[in-house]
Length: 130
Length: 130
DNA sequence: CTTAAAATTAGGAATTATTCCTAATTTCGT
DNA sequence: ACGAAATTAGGAATAATTCCTAATTTTAAG
Image (cartoon, rainbow over all chains, first blue to last red; front, top):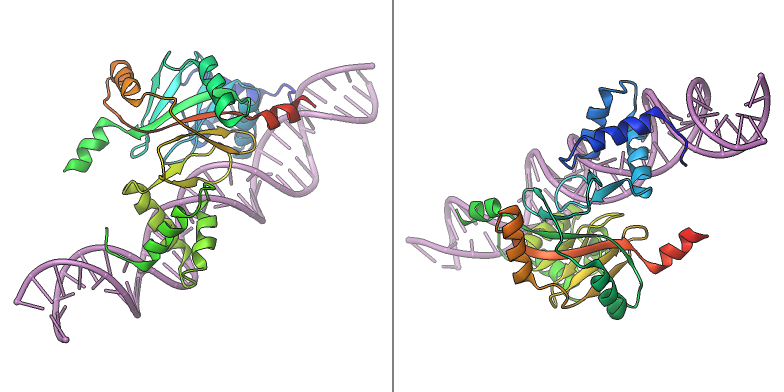
């Protein structure tokens, strides 16, 4: 794994130019513009490889399919479990401290990749009150 | 939504007695012991209702199907993105403070339901070095 | 206790999301 | 330039979940 292919490069380009946390399906549609012959399995396979390589990040959604994020800057996500909205935010968690606390509590020296907040956004809260 | 049914009660019972974060499939298998006639769609539907009612929590996995957790005590989860191991841990995040920070940054007054750490566990780290 | 409306069910079909398979092509190291 | 290794397109297969329908159960009101 790691030979050059224009397909993989096109996928990475799409991710670099897109900060909307696209789904695999959306990535596929976007990459079709540059690579009209690309197949969906190639998109899925390369998405997984890029995650593996640490170039993009996988967001585990509460609703709907997984989403992906190019790592333009270290940040965290807050995800609405009702409507699936994603909010980016910065500088809240001290990973070293967390990592240490984790080590103490679970006795496992995990590498922390990301921290995600799940909840209900303002909009969905007000909808439910009706 | 919210009429009594022995099926829903049986599902909740399974969740109360199981702290292994079962998948929907596993819940289905377990509940079959008490309700041999229950159908998978009833299990899925009721799981969603119980999440909605706040009786159980949905864990958005990095690998494999979603998992569920009875809310016996407030706690957070650390999930290995490679093998899917789940670690429970306690008392690390100050939700009020976080909620406030979120409000400032994203200008959305989200209700925080849970905070999940995603990473790579010790075991998977050492496997990769080989 | 009836009774009617509302909620829930079983069972299976349908849908969605993702992975797997294969033969052909491309890339890479020498 | 050549052979091994990696990658591809295309489609089949699988996994996870939701949707549909007619029958049954629950609830609330009389």
